[in-house]
Length: 431
Image (cartoon, rainbow, N blue to C red; front, side):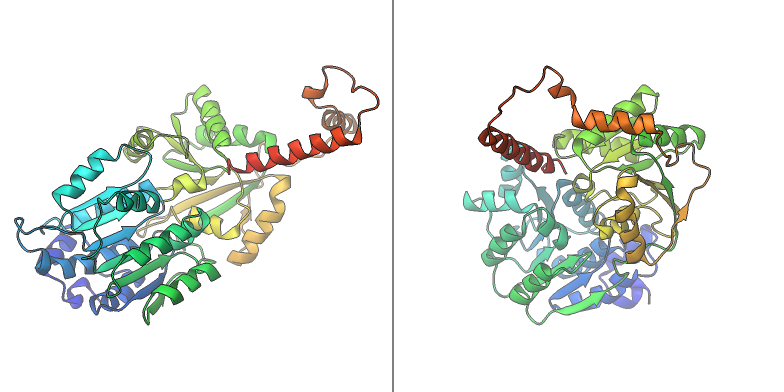
């Protein structure tokens, strides 16, 4: 099948030729005809399969004759929900690209920035609105958003909406839309909550699925270093300098870790920046732009902040921390080896992460190559080092200010225990 076989409007066909699109990807080949026939759709496809084009192209094909001239009054006819600001911007780029010879107008709204410029654009009129759930509900409550003319509702990265706690907001938004809408739901995985969402709000949907989440891209080479946890930064610097690799996306578990890795790289004169939830939207977009333009050699990201990062020619992904959810590994390395290009995924596995690594190999059904020529391998500690480590655990620095008074009450111990538990819960918020 080619795009010409889909009988799309000539203005879209012209753009696809200019973008060198010849044959649809599997998700596009299955989804576009279904959307053109105006059926509801549930699409299971992971990152890098071309799913944004799978819904953007048929939606534009539908809107083109309706929108008509530039002078026609614009109302929101398509709403796309995205979990992150970065993904929302990339979806906007796709609509702008495929609709460059049309009179459709698309825009994004998201939280964390002043709402006034967004409201002013909405007042000017918009055909396609791409939004994060929180800001959409906020502006709708204020009376700035009218969804009564909506024809398409797209819920993108539904599983990430679930992970980030947006699923209830999504349900509220669906209830604000007309009953005769066409609903398209896309997700990389299909947990029970997402299947329930589809059953509840979609009308006799068609199901399409490509590249199961347990499979990794064929063009991605994978290898793992079994490394001491405290040596991970040294190994990263060693690879970047000795192997002379650049344009690298490095995944870490926490915001704090991302900042520390960047500091270590900069000390060794390696250009690097971090992207995570504490960064402002302006800073995140600047860093992404500089990374895409290769002004920054290394981008260090947490999983949530990396949602929506879409770089076609990304050659390297490094798992600085092994994810405790094996499907996350598949999503991470799916950001390289795209569009027929080869990619390399490198993982650093500490002793405390071996169980996670076994789960990944079980899910992907692969025994990933362990690098033997490793300057920082696992090692056995001497008896003196083991004793020193045990003493450190028993006498942490914050307790070295003096000996604990005798007769500490059980109530006080319980209170301290509760504080410790609360501290641990707060730490989890960094993940």
